[in-house]
Length: 320
Image 1 (cartoon, helix red, strand yellow):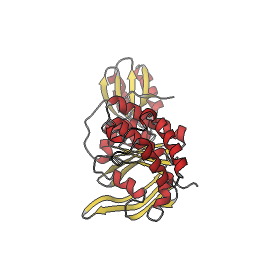
Image 2 (tube, rainbow, N blue to C red; image 1 turned 120 degrees about the vertical axis):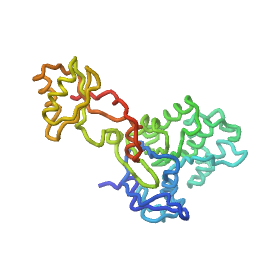
Image 3 (cartoon, rainbow, N blue to C red; image 1 turned 180 degrees about the vertical axis):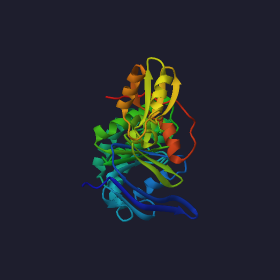
Image 4 (cartoon, rainbow, N blue to C red; image 1 turned 30 degrees about the vertical axis):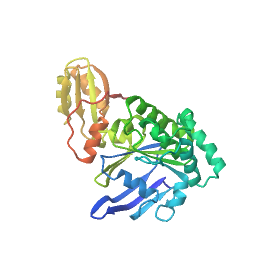
């Protein structure tokens, strides 16, 4: 079997008495992977360990390479967009991207050609000769993305790429990120504390909290209520309470939301067919049935162990 893009075994990193990563184990694959967590949860530290920029305990492998001993090789194959500004005063966008390409081992002529191409992709072709000092926040984020792309990486680490952006710039940045896997043939690891960003562009998620990995899986797995598919939302023409009573006789837990809707947690030996059978026997017409899904905010709070306010489910997915 192919080795995962990222493999972690008991990865631990401390800064003196402060433990930033606590025995993280994970095997990571995907197209756009959201690395989620509150500020201070260990996301940036994890990325720097994977790039071989920080010493650590345990094991971290990227593209099959050990980060502790093959950091330079990893950085040749991985693009990194840091959270903080990373350019010298007076440097233009072309100069920064060319320099980044040369650091990755490209000859200067090729590095400059790729710098122009990356800046064009990032939408900065008209501003590429201007000093970055005078750029807006949105333009600075774009040039950081361009320098991460200049050497055509296999994986792209993006650390808070929409931080500080206005709504329009944020939308534009997320559109660029969503296109990257297909247009640049690379995998994205998107590190952020902004849940809507992950929900919009990611197919998988990793959730960090207090230095520990609390969840790793698909977005559907994250949003499934407690990981089960037996909690249903049932829409009826009328008399939801009658159907609730009929299902309750089987041991189902029911909550009548309105005369037209109820939430049902079925016992282990029941299926959605049971709902239709009981509805028919009770003379109740079912108009819709779907698996109950949490909002990503509720799922995130559940995973990290914080109480979440009770919220209505999102629109049910109609069962086939």
